[in-house]
Image (cartoon, rainbow, N blue to C red; front, side, top):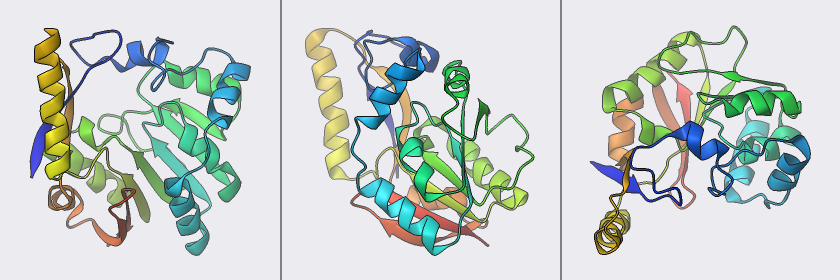
Length: 223
């Protein structure tokens, strides 16, 4: 099952613009600071949660040395994982990735469009997909897993934007209700899928080895 996902932003944008969100300090959940000191204060203020613990545990259990994060955004999760793995590589499609690269916090940081660009010429033990599943159509999402599988990426950690259920459907309904009351149209932000909808994307390329719906987080291994 899949539904369209909408959101409202402080900037009241009507069309999703990730560059704008990363550069706008009023969008605290998405903004990447422009200097290293402010950035470090931002990421170090976040206490590691169950997601970080789950990934760190998986990394240790499977002797993972290199993580490639696709669509890292601010990179809070990736920052927290640095102590658990030899190399953390962060990527994104926005200009903000150049700021992350200049901070020298991660082992590498560069612009990477997982749909259009060739895979990086480096060994990747685990590909981290942090809440980017909403960005893709079904065909595009399936192409992502095909690409990783063909490149020999053994493990994938998928942090879904949400696992679609009745509660999430009600949440989406409330977004539209608030928008109607305020007279402001929300921005289309992609898709929410249930577990079966997600499985369709990796079927034939990966198998699920762990799934914690309460986080949520899903770990996959290449076939």
